[in-house]
Image (tube, rainbow, N blue to C red):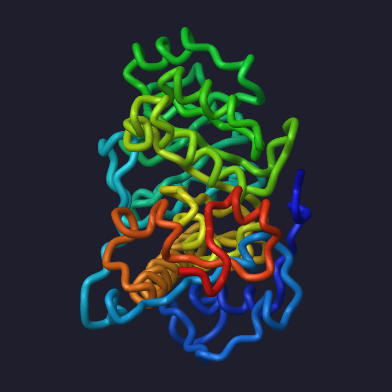
Length: 345
């Protein structure tokens, strides 16, 4: 059962924030806009529209002092696919199927330069720019060129899991990746992990049975991968957990999903709105704006981690629910998330 609708629009304030970082607006592209420490954000003043709106960072305490990322290093890189690939930040770009082919080519090149993932799900072709960049590209074409190393297989239920297909993909020298709906069925995640997929992409926009909010699905999958019966937690360090949805808005959502267990978050609509790609289709302009936006979001993630007293996103934030508290959430939802209520020790 879902707590909130998965259709979440972009409010004007968030859109302006993204566009200032990309360079569409403002004067300092690539930099997080300066904002007040005060907030009118949900759930305190504005109406919450997602479970993520109820989750807040617990902040640094005396025994875990805050870190100023402008003076001290905060590591944003993450290692995925069992440590075989290093990303500069736990971000990726998705939703490319509605872009012109020339723009898709430029997005893949830009993602590679920035060290983030490019998700080609929904495309019916493999861009030529994938060549030599296959480690940083997720493709859904099982039968294609060998350029893309990471091959996605859509799995809607545990009955769809085919271990033989996984082995065939692996025998071709490529990595099998399962793309699954945002479901509350633990058996699906167990089946995918047992079939030895290298990564699980939880896509909230896929239709499936027993759909739940992306936040709840990520928390459940993380627990399944840590379950001692699944190999003593070993799978949690060999299976990469990736989350994506068209309703994700920016760094705040990314940071909270990391705390719930994701290692990479793929943005779909927010990066396109932030770079204004629907109005300006020049590849060189898109590349510059996307680079600026990713740089700005990386700095925002450093600020968020530093405020929580975390010096590394991968080793300190990913799956660390103790860094977060929840406000005004039902007890059953709190239990599913594994996040304590505000005020709890």
